[in-house]
Length: 116
Length: 351
Image 1: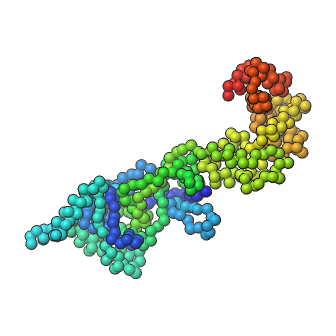
Image 2: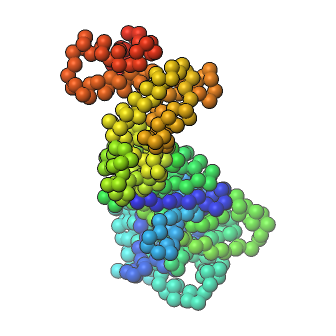
């Protein structure tokens, strides 16, 4: 059996992005848990460091170059089952926004509660 | 339990595990309000973003005024990630394909035109979000300098992945080639009627079965001394091979041709009724090299000839006393034509 990986139609492969979170995202929906869900707000500070706010967590991160680039492949739709399976290169990731530090929780209402 | 206490507990829980756990439950309420919205409309306004920043006690002044809202796509894209080493990247950037080869029972290998890599499915406990485009800071710098107002832009996350394919250079899996070709050995045209073409292998058919790159496979076929006949790669039966070989040496002897001035065309024409030209010429080329002195002519590869004669002698008799063997061997090799210094003897017997 052979599976063909076709190059991108333009020889210069488009550069895509990647965010790496040290942890898991969870959803309270079982079927299709993430479809269409908002993850959070991505900011940069003036030094260019990324900051991501997911729910009540503030994550500060950094830009990290990948040791080796990662190609993103997409499976081609087959016309019939006898056709050879083919993939096509869609893009390539060369650096990532890495959020590996402990998240800082947002405790906005805490003061109010303690006062009460 | 107060909200504050719950948050603290949740936070402690989150840092207790081996990996941090972002126990953020993605809001389904927001999802509902999104119905009917096209992808280009941002679900969060500048006010929403500022409200969150305010709660987090982060001053907007220290931030680039452009905020990117990350949202999962409505349908998960069928993407696979493949780590690229130098060879793979160069292959793709030069517009060539990569090919994954192997049956369901085997570990898949990935081939360029001349190298083979085994594929390992590497899992990571981290979450990788694949996004077609995120603006990086330098791209946003322009906005920062030119726009006083903050801007909010939507970025669609195409896929969440936890694994990627990692290629590692490996040896091609070539042992099977001999096995496949042994199914139908070529014993002469008269036997071809009984041959089932289902058991024959063209180069393309071999590629679908053998886990090797094209160049590695071709080299193996040459090493096995296989020949291409009617579009299929075949191994020659030893007897048949020896017959063709004898025709070549006999022709040279009969016509008294100098060993470095052999005409392939003449030689193969002499036997075209007995041996298909296609086969004859490939065997011929195995035992000769293009002549250095005479362009268009061939010279005999004397080592290969001596080895073939030795092999045929040993095949028939199995055991041979070395002292008896050597003179017989010497006589069998085109007497008088090929020099037979003892150096060559040693070289061939050793190899």
